[in-house]
Image 1 (cartoon, helix red, strand yellow):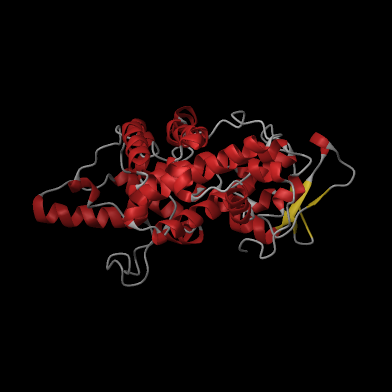
Image 2: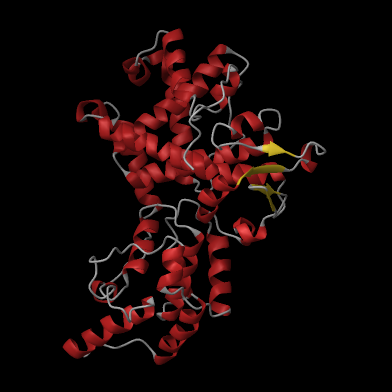
Length: 391
């Protein structure tokens, strides 16, 4: 289910200034520029707009430096026209800087920050929540008997099925959700209200919409326009580089043996791309089967857009302690984590290749025959049959 074709009209300028990333935001931002007689060149260099640029840099730097997202409390007074202009155009300026960088890692980090901020604000905005939700979901309804924390929201199953695989946790499995006549109940969970749970789901749609919008701008942006943002781009790119300088080194000899599903999960996380629950669980359990340490496994997740050192360490520890078995090929395909199409990889095309550990063992056996390398342990190999039976 794509974004709703018809978005609700929002006439409240303060609301649009608070959420300039909304699908309705393009027209609103144009109206703010026209109303104040501001051109894009003015936004870049006019001295009287320095406060707008400064606010934009703050939003951008918060996204880069704090992976949990931009501080929802860091807002401007939106009761004045100046406040509305500053808040909305600061978002536009930050987006221009990100697009002018042509750096997808920076894009992923910024989008995660803005989406996380939206998640927090949507979760608190009871008055406007239905209006905001309908900007991203095909529909939404609420339990009329509830109010505030007792309110329960329901969303169409099509929206839930599309968005839930991108979120980790048992709550987000359809089998664990009450369903009635094609509607999924977003009841409270994990210490959050129904509104906050629904906001978390909408965050995935916001992330997708922002990413697509920025990629489209990048494709249209020429070098001369991008050069106008060279100073802020250089500054924020340097900070981002410092943030990710501890990426785990990997040797080509070992990496050559990796199955494509494992390789793609590692590569996506390194690029700051969000990997769904199936992919993350597979990456951790496969690392265990391959004999990697917990520290090495945690290193794979450092550049994830929603990375938290404490949460990652805890979850990896649970997987290692319980000795999770990696998903088989069938389960990975079901979970949208198999990147291979027929003909892409001759080894994957083999009928007997039903599990990534078999791929790894075959690669290592070949290397052993060629140069005396070491094959995977028999203990790890024995785990394959268990997963094959469950996939």
